[in-house]
Structure formats: C-alpha cells, structure tokens
Amino acid sequence: MSFYAEDREKFEEAIRARERKYGYKRGSNASLTKPKDYASISESDFADPVGYNYPIDKAHIRGAITYWQHIDHRKAYSDRKARAFITERIVRAALKFGVEITYDPKDPDYAKLPESLKKRMKGYGQKSMLEDVNAFRGWQEVYLRAQDESKKELSLREKLEALREQRQQLETELNNLWKEQQIETKPIDEKYNEKRKEISPKIEKLSSEIEILQHAIGEEIASV
Image 1 (tube, rainbow, N blue to C red):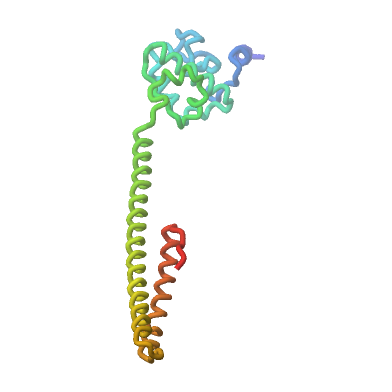
Image 2 (image 1 turned 120 degrees about the horizontal axis):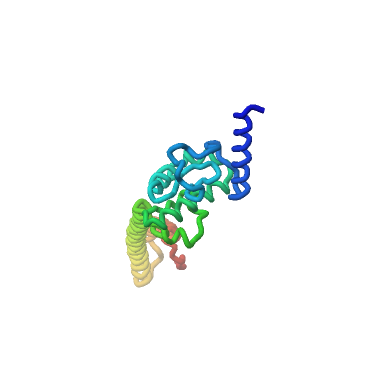
C-alpha cells in the first residue's frame, strides 16, 4: 500500500467515525480533510461536521444561511437525517449570534425543526403578504358572489310579485264577468265563454311560471 493510499484510508476511517458520531451519512460534497480556508475552524463549528461543510462560526454564519437556503445545495445529501441535522445547526448558530433568519413554511427541512426554534425565527406563525392578498381576494370573491346572488334573488322576487299581480288581475276580471253573468240571471252567453277561454290559459301559464320562480328562489310553493 502506497503512502498516499495509507493516508486516504486513514482519512476514510476518520470520516466513517464522524458519521457514527453524528448519526448521519456523508453527502456527495464531503471533504476527507478540512478545506484550506477552514483549517483553523474546529469540527464543532461546521454545520456539517462529517463532511466539513458550512462553517457556522460568527464570521461565516451568514454565508452558511445563504448557501443552505438554496435547495440545490442540499441535493448533495441523500440522507434526510443529514439535512435535518445541518438545518438545525445553522438555525441554532444564527440565533446564537443574533443573525436574523426567516422561517419558510414551504421548506420541508425548516418544517421539521423543533417548535422552540421555529418560534424564534422571523415570520414563523405569520402569514406572508401573498397569503394575505390571496385571502383578501378569496373573501372579495365570496362577497361579490353573495352580492350577485342577492341581486339575482331580489330580481326574481320582483318578477314573482309581478306575475302574481298579473294573475290576480286576470282572476279578478274573470270573477267580475261571472258575477255580471249571475246578476243578469240569464244563460251563460258566448261572450263570457270566449273571455273565459282567453283568460284561463293565461292564468294557468302565469301559475306555472310562478311555481318555477318559487323553486328558483327556494320559496315554499304555496297552493294556488
């Protein structure tokens, strides 16, 4: 075994040890050793201490937040435990250093955070502006629809009353003709029969239209 191979095996064993220690599998972006720029940063100051990614000390926490907010950067971790572990460490570090971090309800990794952490993040439990706008639009649509239905019902009722009035006038006209016929005490003449034949179908038609309208506005059908 070459010196290089011996070193690589040593580093591989070290990363496997870190996997056991922290309870998650390395990501595809894992480094066997600390990157040169992060050489002075302790293992505990990495959000991903297994792969030496995302330093979360005071000098680097803002960068860690920015990188981790991009979902594409998380695709390197097939292990869900890894994503949950890294997310929580970044959030805890941000809160520790007083760095504002915004809760995103659509982010599945944020959703799995402990409630105690989510409550300390900006925007948690608050509706977004878009949600407020959509809620207002939804309410507005319901209101306008109710207004339209109310106007429609009023229009139907007005039409219903007009039909009832027309029917009442025809019935009154027919009744008056009948009374005149009775007063004159003579056999029913042709004029009355013709008038009755003219008026009766109109009354029947009006009664049918009234019944349809009553159904349309949900009114109990009265006997006619």
